[in-house]
Image 1 (cartoon, rainbow, N blue to C red):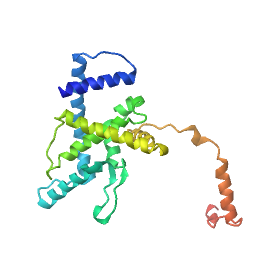
Image 2: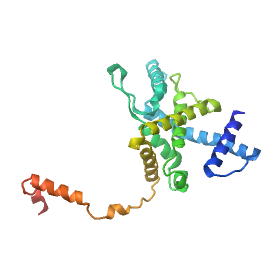
Image 3: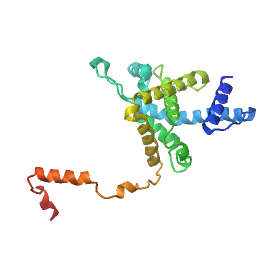
Image 4: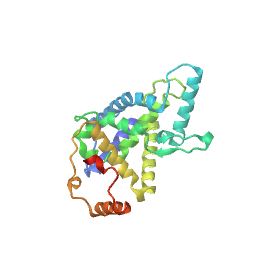
Length: 246
């Protein structure tokens, strides 16, 4: 029942985004639910190896390694530590840093949507420029599920068998991203991040990037003024490296 309710909610939200009024039926709901679990399975298969290597889990039965894995799971799940580039070091009073800057986010997005020129992020670029906020939330939800597989210190497969539970996790990531955007709006951090995620994905897919016209314009006046200032600071003398040009 939870799957059906989630599918209905997704359909209504999609209709709102597309400004369409189309009633769902059993066939549509079944199509959505089937695709959801197919997609989540595909994402897990691609992302789980990244979680192991990029967060530093070790597949071993040694007690010391098992203990480290358990501690790492706790650190990553506490206060959304998985979203940070660095977990810091509480023992040395070093705080966490790089919120939403962990490299696994870009890596996961690349392998999920930008593997090549035929992947979804390229073919349906109109939906990925910039990369959608909810797409980031989905990646973080899958990453969190993969982390949970190491809860006991050794990796054990954990399916998305509890849709309500993982929907709650997904919703929390969506809320966090919106809060982050609202509180950093002055600096435009999240919009820049979403644009960068798509741009880097396009590069990963080997998409030809058009040279912007602005890169072909004349030198700006301030660049010339800066060059004059540097020349004056050298008391009118050319750089000591001038001989290299002759």
